[in-house]
Length: 448
Length: 181
Ligand SMILES: Cc1cc2nc3c(=O)[nH]c(=O)nc-3n(C[C@H](O)[C@H](O)[C@H](O)COP(=O)(O)O)c2cc1C
Ligand code: FES
Image (cartoon, rainbow over all chains, first blue to last red; front, side):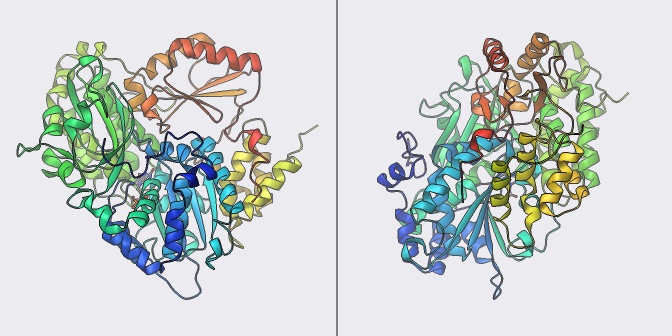
């Protein structure tokens, strides 16, 4: 097992309580941070090389330095706890087991950014976690870690949690801001970026739960030490949520740079493909990232071992690579059908499209219909090219990246598994062996 | 006689605390949490008068509430059974047998997805990834996640809810007095 910077104490009984968390070194980073200058904290985060853990991997220190600081205008830190990317369940794990790690990270980060009111936006389905966070926050207030004059430093911070109402799109940062303002989750056109005009038009930083939690070890150990962990521009540790056809699904903290093969097969992590079956494909970073067949997930096209890092997973671009994304690692064994799985994901994106942009609203629906007729045994030979054409007309043509997220799985499945599409179209009877379920409520009839 | 839509004193106090979490003039921001409270208070769904009441608390137009309530999947705009059984139907859960779970519940309760049992006890709904794919298949009822579900565990779960006969909502009543700040 590599270094455990976030999950070291996750199994300590009672770690969700303030006294136990403190007895294990909790709030030391806050004490240290409050003795520093906010700008020096931003510098530490820059030096650490920390990149956003929500999916896009944008350097956190740089994002923080873009925050506008006009005189007399309050600014806000908003934590993105919407975690809805299929295959991703690390933030729920972190928040429910280590609520004070997130609360401490929020105080440290808010201080660095000069925010006096911060919010954690958590997806509504996780109301039980909302109450865990509320409890931790109440404890922090009672101990003088939140509220006025925190630990005698003169710094004031109020921290609140807000539940969403069930909508994947609210994980997109501008949709999240709209939702926090009590509106429908329609993403905004950028610019202006949230750093200039975010929640209530005020300068806002939106960061993922894990990103904010990572500031705690960064402050404790110093940015330079943190940057020594990992490989190249992928510094530090990353939470990976592993699921699908593996022996040991769960959340693992890895040092970035761990070989994919070790992550998949070692008993410390996934423990190998379930029941000794063969690996077929992996969706390495949440449902949105390109799916890769077994050979390409384990080795790059150049023949090098593939590593769990931003760069190595992306090696080869979309032709032969993928993305680290949110760290949702979904494994498909030889019994799974890539085409049926794709239909399921495409149905998801169609259901979750907010409907603002025509290419996404209509295109995801068309892709779902075409895929549906293929999995129902009515596919036509020209459907594969039709799907390719539709996805290419969504990618990059929408206000927010949900459109891209819907098109990449389609493009990559066709790129690497064209033969499976062709087989289903030629031999519809083969589909019967693979189970699938579809919802009547949201199902569109097959296109004639 | 028409039902009166008004929060209990305790829930109203919580709603007022939540509204204060946002800056002056931005009280509309409290809309989503208040809709969860309304669903908890008013039998698990949001009727037009229930939403009008929320609008009055926030001093906004009813239409501003309707357009938001209809956007998010957790808000029920029709009456639902006491226990809304939400089965995750997204890729990872489905790879591990969510389809069988849904079919089993449909057979057991003799309803289809989206329907409510005649006794008003259960409504079956399928939902998208609940961020718990490592313990798939997942069913959510109220605030509770039921993990690693099998048909046998479904039977136990249904019997348990039925024998208790309580209404389950996402915002569970037991938390109303929890946080006073
Ligand atoms: C459709 C969509 C859904 C997203 N969902 C999430 C999410 O659930 N959690 C998250 O942290 N970021 C999500 N993001 C990314 C956010 O827009 C944003 O980049 C992120 O919160 C920034 O935080 P970070 O820099 O700390 O990663 C999503 C983006 C898109 C386009
Ligand atoms: S797919 Fe069901 S919880 Fe993620």
